[in-house]
Length: 205
Ligand SMILES: CC(C)(COP(=O)(O)OP(=O)(O)OC[C@H]1O[C@@H](n2cnc3c(N)ncnc32)[C@H](O)[C@@H]1OP(=O)(O)O)[C@@H](O)C(=O)NCCC(=O)NCCS
Image (tube, rainbow, N blue to C red; front, side, top):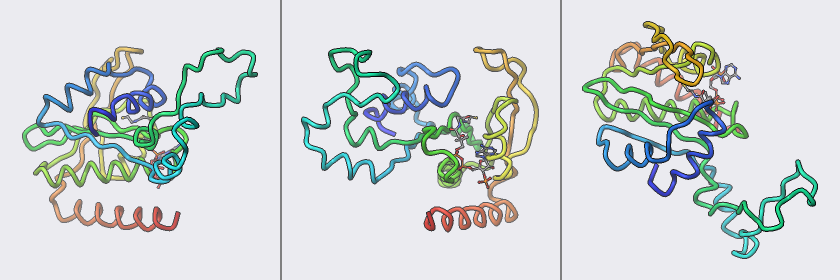
């Protein structure tokens, strides 16, 4: 993730989370936090398709199928984002704290879910955790977020406690989840097997 990706990241964040970080938080993370690692996932096809659209065409407002034309504002207020931005379909990040990698966020655009891509981002984060010398990976997740919990459990995260009223928007509790030591032979094997299976699935798609 780079600074210029932030506006699109925020768009996706708004679609994915009930409450969001202010844009300045991402900029701070990218500029000032040397322990932070943030990634974006791009749909290469979008970049290719959009890059052949002539400039004038690309600046027309998006057709909004939900509203009749008469209800749309007379001046275009929404423009098609530049191809490099529109191609971002997911993002994720972590911090390294001593030898622990803390996953801070992971979100897929709703149109791209259930394709194995959120899993691909988690795999990418765990790969980063290996590369930066983390021994464990940990995160917090809403107690009601079974979808994300399923993804984490698949990758060996286990519940290790609860943070009461952790989320300020609805006072929901957070489950604290940890992996086993990622360098243990058993975790490495599990991770490699899951990753190989995922890559096969994605290639087949
Ligand atoms: C969590 C999230 C990133 C998953 O992304 P995704 O691309 O849809 O997930 P994938 O297709 O890669 O699925 C991977 C695994 O996640 C779990 N999962 C994903 N969607 C699920 C669903 N609707 N119901 C139950 N489990 C689900 C499954 O374990 C799945 O593995 P499987 O395919 O072997 O069943 C996505 O749902 C999202 O962006 N949610 C909103 C943001 C969020 O809650 N982030 C987590 C904050 S802690």
